[in-house]
Length: 386
Image (tube, rainbow, N blue to C red; front, side, top):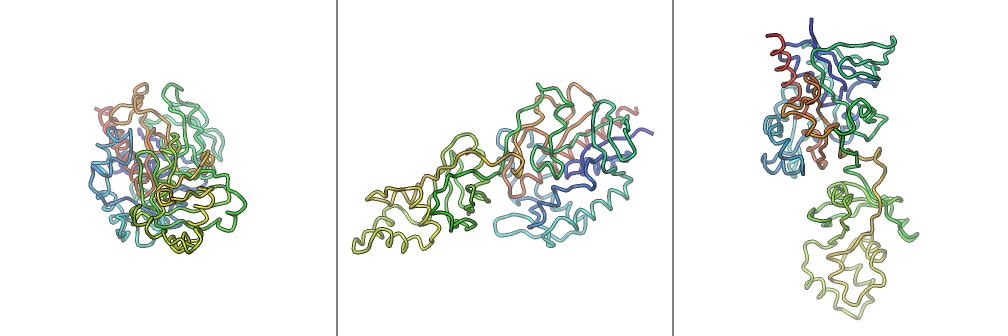
């Protein structure tokens, strides 16, 4: 009996297996790690952000240059469909004030267990500790029982990106594909180094709240964290793409106050400037940032509080990034995510050349491309049987 093979048991691979098995096809999933979906489980430890509840056009715009290619996939399996999928797995969900959608359990493990049960009921066989070592049309695996060669009628590659290698995304798969089809990997949603002076040490680990971060065209009101190495956290991740591309980072420390109001509040010359700053900012971390990044302080400091330069340097190492940009180019794929050079072989998930911010976009993108690849692989198998 013919079967489909999925390499990679992350969200994209499991969704491809779900689509294929739902269509009645036998499916084998090969996973290099001892258990499936390790990065998914890690992401869910602090609250699994499934998706972002917002209109399709706005949602798709967060996928940058890949948005036109991904639009039909995200329209078919976007925020509404992700929520329906979670509910179908008996997971209660809720939407936060920001529009982010979470399972009520606030972790990934209950959802994953329910999903794996459904896949098992649909006949999906997951083989763990199967590492892909060679071959594309007939892939060879290093397994606990020695080398094994499979001859699937359709193959879906869902091998992940190039960050968090210990969880499975080690990009080892690139050696199996032509170099011309690959865009270089770059870190995405990562922190950045800052060469702090010793005076900042007591503030490491502290959040900077209620701040507008500006980098290139991206302006976002969010918080971030000072660390010994630099800055990280949600606000930094949101501007990481333009920062990676060389845009400077500036901070509006008082986004609710116009410059003239700030200037007026600082006009009391009976107090020293540091004391006036302390009373205005009401945050020792923000005050420390001003003293760190704006010395010598100008007489008119109000404009600086609205545009404080934060001198970030290089991004943190790619393996520490939440996700990666780069990977298998869409020009090497058909509209159905099949390799143009290899009919019957499809690709999905983070191994594709796209990026998105945190906040539900990454996971939805993986699920949507996995479903799209799985459904198109099912059509390919059905046509092959005619």
